[in-house]
Image (cartoon, rainbow, N blue to C red; front, side, top):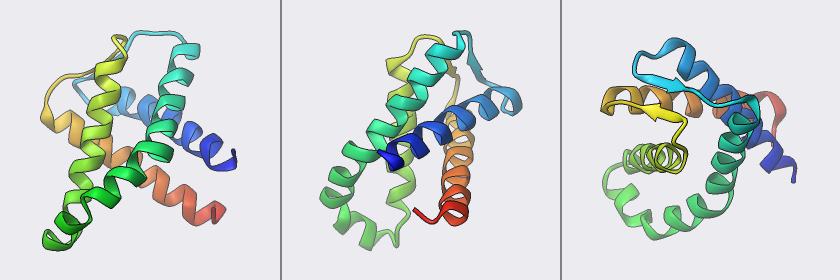
Amino acid sequence: LKKILFQTTIGILGFWLATKFITGVSFSGTLTELVLVGFSFSLINSFLKPLLNLITFPLKIITLGLFGIFLNVFFIWLIDLLFANLVIAGFLPLILTTLILWSLSQLGSFIIKL
């Protein structure tokens, strides 16, 4: 539960920062919908990501971990598809949004030590 709450907070903050600083990322919903986006991000990271990490482990070894970035981009793209109020227009804004969310997650994990 602690991890899901942490990931939800990271998702909310990350998507909000992306809408403020990245051209091509916008969110036209309410705060409640942003919380739902963050919660969906945490569910994907908690349940779908470990499964896909296991399945794609050989690809991660071959690409020296680079394939993990593509998985993260895929998850953010999936969130974009699920929520009509979140618009990430283009590949570069998608990559930059992924980097923001990844950086916040790494920083938060370092500070909180989950």
